[in-house]
Image (cartoon, rainbow, N blue to C red; front, side, top):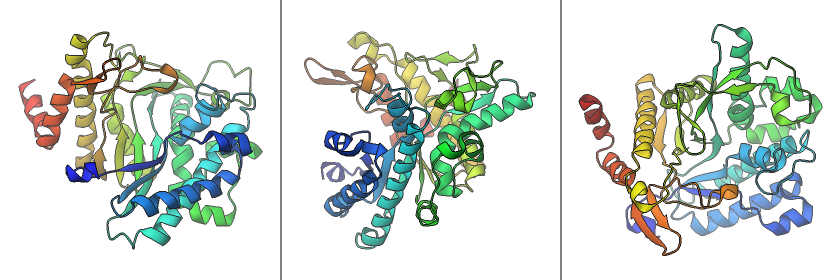
Length: 365
């Protein structure tokens, strides 16, 4: 209500990794097929409660992160890694089925009731992968495989009807199969693709075959590296604005140009004190570079509908705690005071001018 009162349109995510612990105890959370039913009940409650004011919905934020960090690496909740040869793919399957059920409920029960303009989609992880050697066919295949095993894993079933072929070939029976009824429900179950994009990497075929099979990274069989010319942020992530442009074109070509929202994009910067935070030129330059690269794709016909910077305020970054700061607003965690950074003022100007300041800055550079 407060957002609407200030002429800000709410864009609501149903699930951003906040699984009720009771469901983890009851049937293993996302490992249990019951989660699909319970998620659909939860979604219906949200649509009923907020649908008269919310017309833009995201079902699941970064299902790839849930599956891999939660059930392969164990770096995020629930911290499982013991059965990484199968559990990430079971979890990913249930996430997609739960997403599709929620979309079906919204479309069949609420979209018309709450008037025209209601849309629902998913927010998928997507970093871009360039072949280490563009002339080397094995590296080109490795880069494409890397794209399929991250962004394609949770996008292909929605826009193409099944998991990527490279995953089917490598994983065989470890990758669940959709029933015909499930396939029909998953296919087309998004009005837009939300993309969380932060970085890019170089991909190549490993010189040695993995010594351990049955784990996601070994299954994929891709070696990652970084171009030494690329700058990095405080997370060690490479800053490659052209990768933002290239991944949107990849989506355009692979999925027949679906509507896209950049649902996360931003940078962590070293800010040990208030003064350094208020002069966050690195974050300003990161946002400027990526927003410009995303905007350039409009001239190529990419159906880009909107952009969200991550994040409004410094926040709790999961296993990293409060140390990494992604916000354009500094938060004093002791005094609970907020301080807009240089990047916040720049971003406000970018919104106010609808990006015209980018053109002006480019002309003066």
